[in-house]
Image 1 (spheres, rainbow, N blue to C red):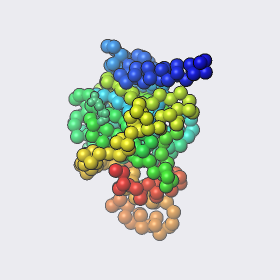
Image 2: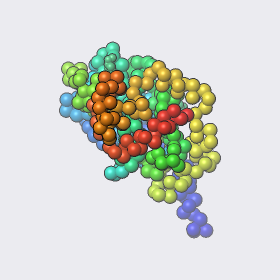
Image 3: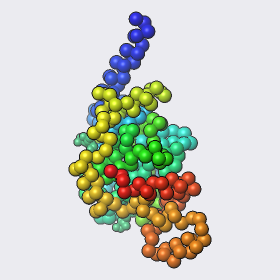
Length: 325
Ligand SMILES: *[C@@H]1O[C@H](CO)[C@@H](O)[C@H](O)[C@H]1NC(C)=O
Ligand SMILES: *[C@@H]1O[C@H](CO)[C@@H](O)[C@H](O)[C@H]1NC(C)=O
């Protein structure tokens, strides 16, 4: 009997935890990791504000780690002149070879569009940026920013519309984050050395304090207890809805929505960045590139960290640019 008890307790604990995490609470499920004096949680723990002023930005992270599932946050971004500010909302593991899945919102001067910046890091290497303009004013109201992450794909959703898909092609050598559990983070910080028009527009501190508002955090995700969870969380079981076949690829309607966003609102795609990834190597290639330079898409300055690994990885990835669905 005794030996049965422990797994049973663990199982019960697991389901209680997963239930309690569905409607996450900023008080219970997160803590401030930066700028405590510049953040506030109120109500029943469903509301959070992060603030940036001359002294500091601020940030939170979840107490728990997750491997696969849905991470949902409703955010109302900094309004008015938000140039130079970045509101980051992402998942990340820790260590030198960390994995990371990002949503970042790059501010702009009043009346000019925010940039929705996305990226994926696997084993410490990123360089997989895609950027979009929102089709709405993200400062006027709360919008639903959700990451769906499972063994087959990562999908970034904005108000239920998939804006990006990163599929698991690990079988043919494309790195995919599926072995490291991640915590969820959000922060508001001063990034005026690169964020707005590549760093040309600086923060106007007269507009401070800058405030981003959050609510409706839902962590419908697999709670990570230790290495044993890697298998558990990836398994297609009745409770692991994220591993169900219907979530392994986009539906026909979602594919149409993705195409709509890519055609109308995508402003940067690493897959198509010839200048950035195919520049190095042979001399005549370099000369040809210089001749054509004006015509090619230029990487924003923040993307200067190109590594050999990344370009090798990119050669493979670019083959797959068109097969994201
Ligand atoms: C937010 O978007 C996600 C992804 O589409 C969806 O699963 C979730 O139900 C949405 N949340 C609400 C409150 O509608
Ligand atoms: C800010 O607005 C300018 C001008 O419309 C635009 O080029 C840029 O992409 C926008 N976003 C950022 C983050 O600079």
